[in-house]
Amino acid sequence: MKPEPVLYTFHKIREQSEQGSTEAWRALLDFYCPLFFQLLDIHGAIPARDAPPIVKKMLAELTANGFERLRATPRQSEREFLGDLRALLLGAALDSLASKKSEVPGSSAFDADKISKLLDGLPLLHKEMLFFKLAGYTEKSLERVMRISPRVAEKAFERLAEEYQAARQSEHDRCPWPAAWLAFLKQARALKTEKCIPAHEIVRIHDGQVSWYDKEPVEKHVSGCLHCLEAWTGLREVGYWRRAADPLSSSEIDDLLQILPIEKLPAKKKSLLQRLRS
Image (cartoon, rainbow, N blue to C red; front, side, top):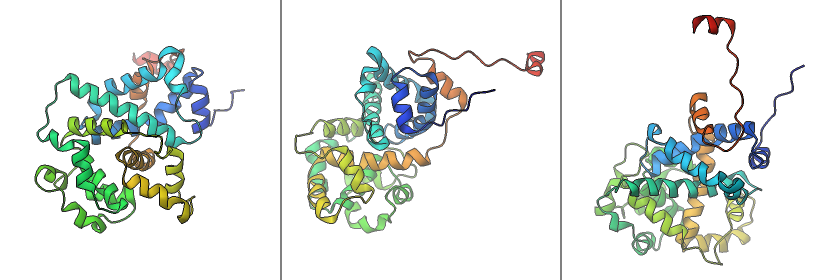
């Protein structure tokens, strides 16, 4: 009798992948690599054909020293886990672009102080939408991610003049200035202080699990903190693309599996018809 197939959930994947389970890693890549490819395409302007080396670099970091980095990732929430991997992935993408000496016109526009001034005085919702526009999102995709019409932030978008004008002209979800943008995101992540909001609190607010009384001070902090605004938008982003990104093929998953320090499953035996054709 054949064993029952394992039904993988986030928690099962998270637990068994750090134990080196090949099937858990296959499930992890199947579940989450479409998201990784999508993030690279948007933030790094890196098409799917060029994404595997960067994803492999991230996977190598996760699995080094007996899965040390993987063991440090969040365990309770899938979105917290993916938010952490998003930061690792975009860091690897920045390294890749830097190694190619990618030069982007207008990169000085992405100084943290300058972005803070660009966002100054806006409501949190409008700041979030501007953040996504700077990342290269079209208004069509922005509406799907935010579940609200971008027209509510039209006055805020008027700030995207001169050096940020390309963000308003995007026809595809792709950042016009990937190297500068990724460097800015890294800078924003480095601004964390002891007052910053834990990812699990942001997830609870996104899910509507927090009262107005409790979420007001959190949103006030996020509105004035680039580190938390980056985390806030990132957690919303991974939640959307986890569901919406196009799946990868089995061969693409197999290619990524090859670099992992796990036991490789034996190749499936060919059928008689396949052997006759080979």
